[in-house]
Image (tube, rainbow, N blue to C red; front, top):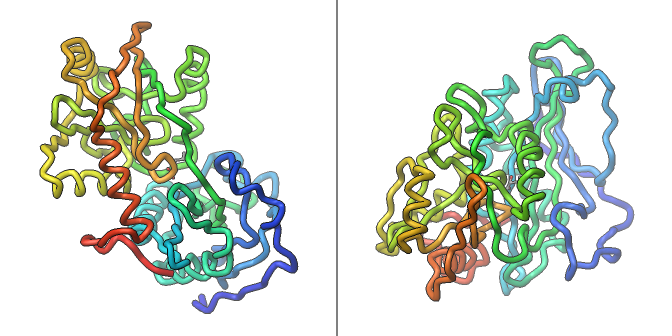
Length: 351
Ligand code: COI
């Protein structure tokens, strides 16, 4: 593989057709994409091409066995028009960890970083200034080999596409605790950003939607007594003034926003507990008034307050706090991401 990325620019830009004030998450894509194929045992020439549909054989293994992994990351523009990525190496490490679990070959770190930066530079006009505006970046790998034997493919496509984004959820989220559904059991693929993990939440989320809840929180596969993560984000609980979240595990995604929040919380002197959280503990804390907040964290969701949860048909409303932890963490995180504050952690990476 040669590291020099071949760049073919789009002849015209679609940017003027886009209403940046009214974006629905993930529906509009920038002018270019990064593409690299895996064939003959190695990754081939990386390219940036105009954003366009790709053609796959109907027998491509991704269609039959879901051999696919993805990442979610963002670019931000500061007041001086400089564009920043947030902890991109962590996304690279995680996509390769996910890939290993799905028997997909690892993607080289230098080509990932170079391709990512070149792509974001080329489509830099799509990264709008202003808190809340960002460019959502979706790296993903799919098994393209035309063959339907249930075994790992020998051909893959690695792509990066980008979509201008505002908020994923508008307003507070109401969640339903899944009493019988789990993201994964031990030994499964829960820790991976495997495409199928997210498809598997559509059905329970549809059931939750019918009852007026936007999201589910998965419970553990063994007992369904412990809270794991939400369909599209990790979850945090604030009981009195302690911040609590479940430990990452074979079943729970090691969220980059999650671990950033934990670091910010610890450094802000907030008491933090990373430990299993029982549904019964949450219900008790809600009843005795010590449950002050629940919020989700994720690249797309950023920090999303949760205003109510439902369990076995009973709904628990969470009273609004004047000083929300979620607001503090969101502000600190956004300040780092948008280059509005010091970045003591070295999380911000310029392109
Ligand atoms: C992200 O937050 O980037 C995710 O990958 C969640 C996705 C399902 C929107």
